[in-house]
Image (cartoon, rainbow, N blue to C red; front, top):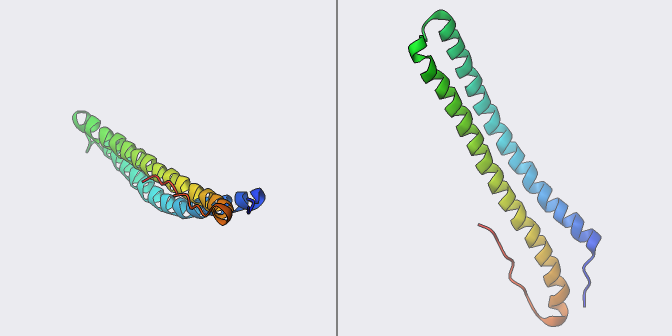
Length: 119
């Protein structure tokens, strides 16, 4: 029976997780920078409009709600992106672990366990 090298397994899990995290961080960073810039520009436009009187007391709430909605949408999208990252991490870790298990039991038992996935 081939034994699982726990230290190697931990190293392989870390490598798989780090690959996903590094890729997804780059995606989230780019998205976040664009969205935060848009929120900042919108906040400046609203503040300037209030100061100059272009945004009146009657329309102020409308524009402020727009910024609230932009912020909410940004954070909801981030939440979704993080959920996808968590699922990708789960799949990667399980794949590495099942590969080690199959390597250990397959040699003697002739058994290959199916790898579970989250979609």
